[in-house]
Image 1 (cartoon, rainbow, N blue to C red):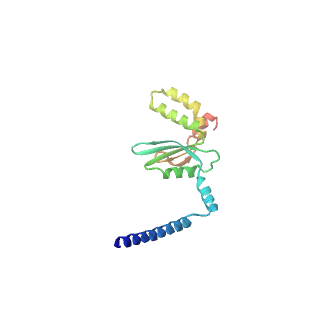
Image 2: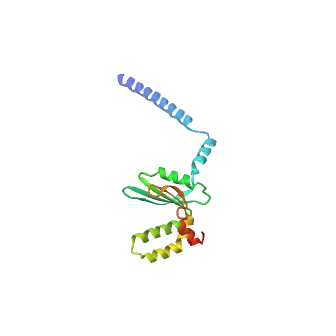
Image 3: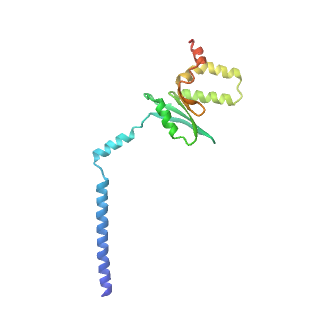
Length: 166
């Protein structure tokens, strides 16, 4: 008889606990769910990034990071992009922004020329051929090695000489 009472009591207790758990979980789901209209608006607001850009390269050394960014067509705030990218740096970093991938490729090519066995004449020939394009499409630089944010940093006297300007 005691066993029967224990089984019946345990069964009732189980039914009560399951009832409470089921009631709580259905309440939680109702309070967590938002109307479909609100869900769509939230999704729409979070899918559009603040800036339109692509990270072309991120090179980490022991002490620093160098990040190259391609600005997407129509983007009008390169300084805002530079600030956003700098927030992601874990070390001292330099950020270079381009509006044409070819300029990034040319910049990388010239950097390699400085590291390998190229004559001064070869580098000068390269500069005469490519500096104007590179200067027109290197939109900005910023960082510990470059200094404060500067737009079109290669548009200097050499650039003007090549363009035939005074």
